[in-house]
Amino acid sequence: MDTSTDTAAHRHTIEVMAEHLDNLGHVNNARYLEFFEAGRTRWYRAGGLLDLCGQAHPDACDTVVVNVNCDFLRECHQHEHLVVETRPGRLGGKSFAVEQTLLNGDGEVAARATVTSVLMDLQSRRAIALPRARGQLFPGAG
Image 1 (cartoon, one colour):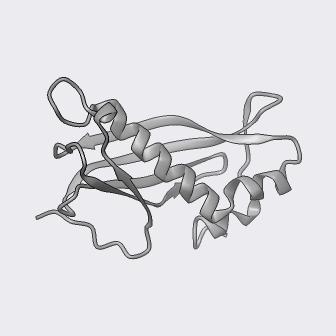
Image 2 (cartoon, helix red, strand yellow):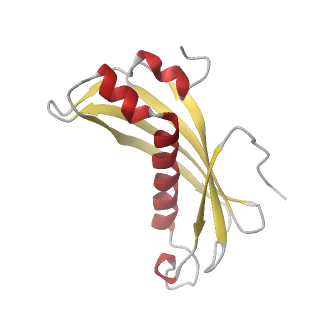
Image 3 (tube, helix red, strand yellow):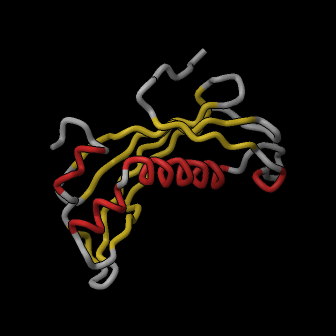
């Protein structure tokens, strides 16, 4: 059984509802990406990413996804309680990646994703440098 043992990951629980299902009776592939988005958003909040951005860039900024790689490994069904695990991945000057895992109700890995994002200045609509205090979310990056 392929299960996660990552104790450092941020976790977010989601209950599968009828609206998450497709005509095959399992969670639609697009919903997996929504579940991963919910996990990332909570990880950003928990780590204070947007607060750090506001301090470093007084003009408003936000995250923008620029690449998603997702492997769908197992079906998920209605009423299952899924766990989205989010952890830091690669860190660049303007971009960063997070590694995410979706665990099914039995604790098995149902999907894995690597999501690359940038911070975007909302006025110029361009990617901006990550704040120096990014080490809070990316330990060892400084």
